[in-house]
Amino acid sequence: MERGDPVVGVAVLVVVVLAASGPPTGVDVSTAEPRFSDGDAVGTATVDETALAVTPGRFGSDFAYLRIPTATVTVGSVTERPRLLYVVSVPGLDIKRTASAVVTGPGRYTLTIDAVALAADTGAGGHGVTMTVRVQSFSAERSLYRANTSVEVPG
Image 1: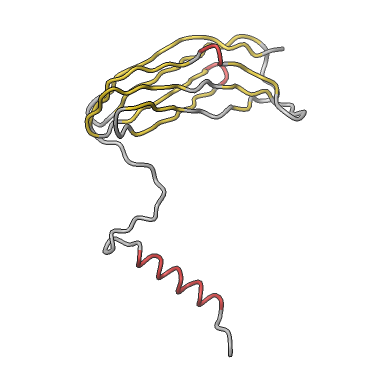
Image 2: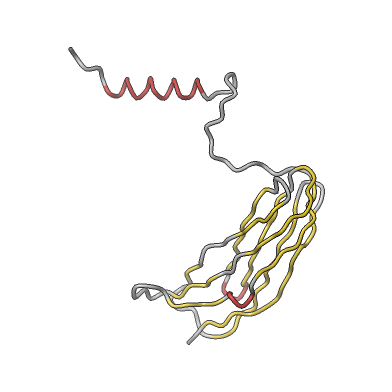
């Protein structure tokens, strides 16, 4: 028995998967997050500002890392599909990071931002930080939390 060309086999497999997951079948194989739209959510947000810190890198790394605390949002009611947007900005270090989640119903949502490596030549000193959590949709935008604080880069 002769084996077929593996390239042809892979091409046939790709065509079958594309055909099976296309619009006519209604099967969605994507891993995309749900999209936000209009709507609003009522809730409260908390961020442990004391967890904001610059720490040395691990395993002998020469880089320090900005550790950003997680935002926790408790949603009591929601209409349609707004999103939660967590923004942390440190202009003095040229850092702006975001995390978002589509609100699909009442409950608790956590918004996490990964640690950010600082340039090796980052000077010591204090830097202003703004942290905000907002509800955002096509028709509305409302702030749930806003804090201005600072972070110290050790020398």
